[in-house]
Length: 364
Image 1 (tube, rainbow, N blue to C red):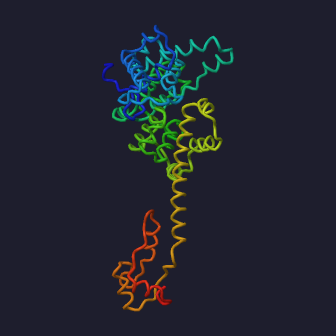
Image 2: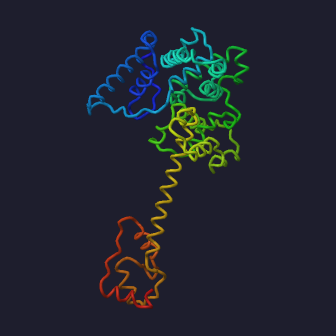
């Protein structure tokens, strides 16, 4: 039933708030809002309450902050709407899928007066990434447990693809294989391939929250197929993925990052383009942090005295070894250098006699 459905969320413990905020910003009028599910209307009410409390300075209210330009509900709804499902077919969707259709159709009505013939054609020829991804999911060998790891949007996309496959004319156009038949290679499926790229980037849980719901679903599907060995990758493809030489989406993101796009320009990108940009920025930040750490260690090492292999007589070595710098005649100068290169590390205090012994020519 409706109550058992899990919200398509971005994570971070505020899924319903984000959902309500987007619905409130979608421009629905009073009559269109009544077409939404009770969950959606409650989420909208919750979001309005939080906005009011934040405006009044209530610190106990969840922080809304500045929202990005994501329109995940509307974009998913536009994909579904382009499939021209029959009314009875729409009933097979989750309440979230049907809510997305309401938002998408309201958007079409709102922009229709301002569209010329070219704009109408572009809107009708919507890219349909969700439906394409649904086709990939429909042809993949995902178990029920794997499907549970996907969002409601991804499962609705698979449901829509399954219904379209049942129509002969649409089935050919979507190039669907038989249900449950695994794709010969994930690299032939561009959205599963994107998920493999993103997974290979090794993002942390917090970094993954910066991705769109679509991107996180492609990663979940890719991981599930990889775990059960259903990707169909040959040795060359596996090697290319492991070496990071097969990642057109991340390379595209790096080009976007290097272009220093204005915020308005970033908003004009698709959610997939913004995902690529997000990952590129994460990887750039990691690289800069690593280079800074290496530079700091190099500067610290350059400031150290030459701690080469000592030529100590047995008595001097015994004296110095009490400090743990040498063991059985083997120098630990590298360990000392590594220690001193750490932040806030101080040189050990030498006794007066030890300083004198190390300062003699034969002790260096």
